[in-house]
Length: 498
Image (cartoon, rainbow, N blue to C red; front, side, top):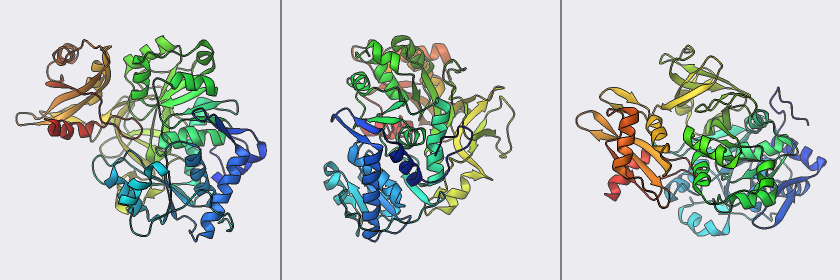
């Protein structure tokens, strides 16, 4: 099986893992443990788990919960579920007990692979009938037959505005998710991605893990991101690229650790996704570390990436997550017709990486599609070259006196202050205007910036109407599992603190 950069991968995850095992080579290294895992051994372990689950009576396409941080056992459990023809149900360890219990119950999973550190917490919220199985299952069963359209992955959204929705991907869309990244970033067998984002999030799973599978590269896997150890781990593991989120880029920028020359020379690029990367942060990172950051955009519903800037020397437009790779992207007007270039509307996408459905929720599935175009809920505009500029989230817009204010406008100004590590503007109910603008920031150690000074900076740059009325300084801002700041939680969080 050869990666075709002009067409999405054919077959199933099982087919591709068989192919990689036959080719040989390293699938993953674990710098914290000093271990590695070959493609051949990964296939052996995955096949044993797949046969073992079948012997346990788990039906084809049935949910198998995986409750693991990044690591060897979690990676093997994921591939075991996929190889066996089951629906790998990735449990978000950062979601909190209620959301975890909901996902386990809603998914219908009867078995779960659970890391020992999480056994007690899972036992407290597990629905009746869920039992824990070990990764050393006896592989005595017959593997289920597999088709590219069969269910492969179930991953729950963050649920910031309601109950989490269960996004279902097929083998075809899951592989296409890795393919879009491989095509956009020119990934090949010589590349080693740094898996610092959790694989229970779509970025870590599709961009990094599936990207390595379809490109024939390998992974360096660590349990969690550490700003203090990042460069040392990347150097020892021979990393050539990494996928991160803006908060990670910002923490590396403001951290004291420096990469050695060999590491800088080897890393071709870093990519940023999950939320907008501040222009000032990107520029300062590249100036300090001499590693280009490629801004991208993706969703759980699209197996991660839909947009990416080209790699250097291609044109990277700072402030834009780029152009479509492997899928089509358009801007929709309110009447769901295509907007003109430069006109703002809702970003929509169609392609082989788009989800099959929301599990047990046909109404939500129908509502998120306009024909065969998936509506992202993000606002943006497309320039004459096809680059998309995101202007905000439909659900995050601040509507002050009838005027729409995109929180990103305020975020960008706050990030221009070198003391600001994290920033997020949000809406606060207001009797006069309906909503007013406030913001929260986290500052670097030894910072001299003050809330009043940051308000003055915003008033100077944005004018008094868009500037925050108040800025709150927090130790850190609330984040989802990918590191994306959850601005919709800030108002309630600050109210509770007050």
